[in-house]
Image 1 (spheres, one colour):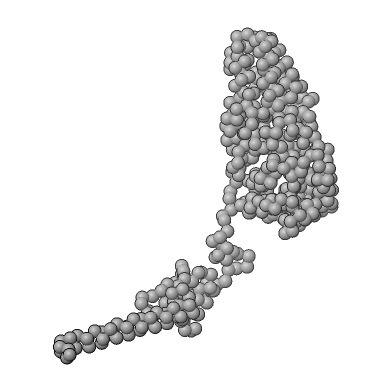
Image 2 (image 1 turned 135 degrees about the vertical axis):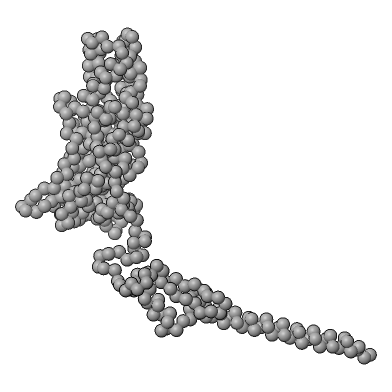
Length: 430
């Protein structure tokens, strides 16, 4: 049967149109494949540029120390290479020797400026007042009563013992208070508070013989046969007391006082200790001497740090040591070795024992052993804001004859300050 002419013409149109569509799709696919090949060779979403054009511009970007970014152009257009933040007409130049590159300047954190030491005690005293020590409000509440019975004095003694002041210091304090209250006939709360403050300051500030304790840090460089030797501070203590953090904070204290410092990461047993100390030092521009080998000889690292401090004429070398239990003879012997080895360059001028104030009586046991092995010259009392047992200050000083020289109250980088008896007592009394 013959087809109508109209149907024949329509079929021809469809076939011709279909072929055109197929051809157009195939052409677009070939074009996309070509674009993909060019993008892979020339960069993300770019086409290859002639060597005389793109390569020279990219090289100019590298020479000027600026980054080069690529942006895709409009459909099929060539891609522009352009330096970022290029100063018009400025000559390309390499950074001077010793100066950081642009990338280093972008990634290196700015040096921090530690808070002045003089203003720290005000903040720390406020935190101490919030620590909830029974030496404050409870003692004042009892002492301000119209009449004090024997039961009241027993309650006072119990509060002092709970605060870890110790039996002998507590007896001494109560004896002096009973005498002054009876003789002076004091009953007004403000007057009682002032008497209590005076007796507490005397108890905290003086040794067993009643002499004021020297709380200054011996940080003056020494001179040996014409060679300037740095002051060496060895920081010791048991695990978890915050030695590495204390070393970092003490470095900030010294930098705030315009002293040059070198840190020694002699805690080679804890993997993160050296990294942690290096971070503390880098924040204030202080160099850290460390070993790349985990488990290296701590005495060797300490020796290298002191030698570096001598060669660079640093004022102070702070040596962080590994935490050790006081009943581990091998570790304690190793601590003695560190003292002997560093003494070949410069003997430690300070051996600071870091104690956790929350440990109470156990901290006193630790202090005795460390004092025998390393010759402790001062105490750093940390976490004092987290305990109601501030009396450990009195007891550890009385037992060892060694003063508390620094206290830590809080986790901030500048929450370390020289210990002052008056400020400490004012913080306790609120």
